[in-house]
Length: 375
Image (cartoon, rainbow, N blue to C red; front, side):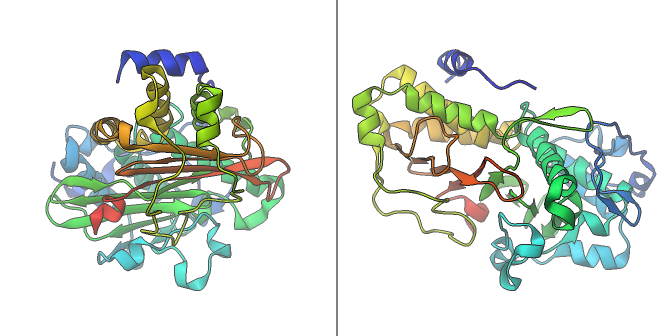
């Protein structure tokens, strides 16, 4: 995996503006060294690679999502299933955090079943579902999710201890996965909130979507190189340095932002008046760089739905504002950047190190009408 070059970002964007059966229980789960980790459950490693669920292979769209969800549920005992499968409620949908579960306040602790409470095989089936509902772009979507799990395994092994690690990530079904009705696939842990909401077989929201990572610099875990959020920083740096000095002055904010404005438990608190530089004044090349900065976020959801969302955001680009504080590199503590459009809201903020020295990023993607599926 290699960090995208700024020139690649510009060039690429200028050119491009079944039913489940009990046989699912018999599918073999295959693993490789790329995703295995060190934290463990009572049944083995907490960070294996996804299962290959052969009975769902021919299904597509929502039918495949439901098939994989049912295949995972078939691996659970009654107590686990009760913990995983919940009635849909926005109250529980809003229970997410950037913090490890052990540091989250009691009123906002994640719901659902943790990887630490699953066997290795059960985690493999859970990951098969997550891989299906996430995007396929390198360093985004499923690839990014796995790298973030690897990052927490790295923290666990390098001073963080048992508070960190893949065992502390939670999966919940809010509502029953089906082609009718409303449900959310909620997955999260330290530096991660994934929330896909569906209604009558259609994805109605892929936000709030939180991503952060420590360490920020490229790290190796079990022989695999990881750099899950460097693409986001590079895209924002390219966007900001692509502006003229006058445009940068308009976009730059005097305030210091030490963290995100609309992070956990800040639902719906969008500023009434946008600040910064309105994108309608930008050249076509500059607009392409703004769209490039959105892509790493939107590409975290499945490819088909990502294309639809990106088309909406592109159509609203002239009414989108960009603002930043700190430096344009997005690598120094208190560096901050924001995109604020009719629907899209994206923030990226550089924090000080917690377990390790150096900075690390927090970032969130929200949609003003589609957070929690608009519920």
